[in-house]
Length: 422
Image 1 (cartoon, rainbow, N blue to C red):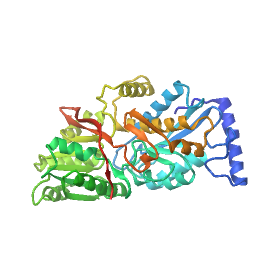
Image 2 (cartoon, rainbow, N blue to C red):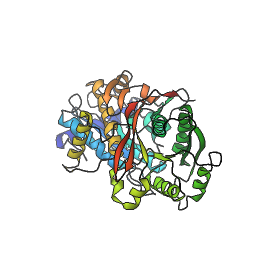
Image 3 (tube, one colour):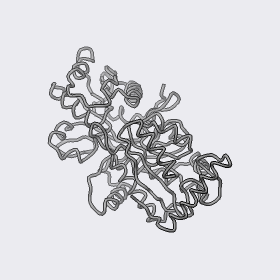
């Protein structure tokens, strides 16, 4: 864990927390902010800001987002090396593991706020976010990958690349449909099948991408959130048969999976064995670590992966800095990069950017005031703006393709005009 404040600061923090608890119980002040007195705001002392995370380190399927924690640590380490935020270092206590379990997600949120007394939760990366209402109520700035509805609307919750699962009135990022159209030589006369897990995230994903691909000119021949979310199916034949006859008795031109790696490996392997030769694509399998096993590499060979950040293959100064920060956080080792690292890194980066704008008098209220007029440009996720990002995607992304044991950029990083979500 990244704990730059030691004995004296710990004693000061303890005194501040005791004062905060007493104030909250006696004067009716809001749980998140206890006034402008130095040290009176939860998680903020004279020289530190305490931050924690919630990450699915483990899951029933074996899928792990643990490197999200490393990505966040990398960004906070650099922030501290550069002097912190308005004179305060970041006391990053690491991430709680929710195991992709709703009950554990809520418990992790409560622990971070009620026991650890964090000012912010960044990153939050899971397929469940049952703790969102609690964090919003307690005025805890929270940052993560905006693939869940809770990142789209609540005042204190932010997607690092905006809202990716909008409600009516919001917009949809068109990077994926536009990228697949480019690969297929256009969308006219082309069809796609969209499949997801039977979960809230899966259902929202299907609704979103069904509209997105339809608006781009594709025929959506199949769109179901029907795969169990608790365990990877051992037999994919029913799903494969239904998809491969969905286009008027024929196979679709592309199969779009809105699922995680274990499911994608099973589905794509079954589709290939059934003779499918169309485009396979998903938003999760950009991870060089997946190439270590022959079976995994073969299952994902030829798959196009959606990214909502610059590919690691980019030679931009921002990407070079990201790679250097990850190496430093990993103790000087060159570790395989993956999208979970980017989730943690850019969640931390957005938090730091807004906190910097909030100034020395940091409270939940001053943080939100700064967020309401925040914007910057040229980041690894494109141009950012709040509160736009709590309703809309930032609209940028790329597609990479896995082939011959390596990733290559298939559609370069670019920003597309989003469409209204209905």
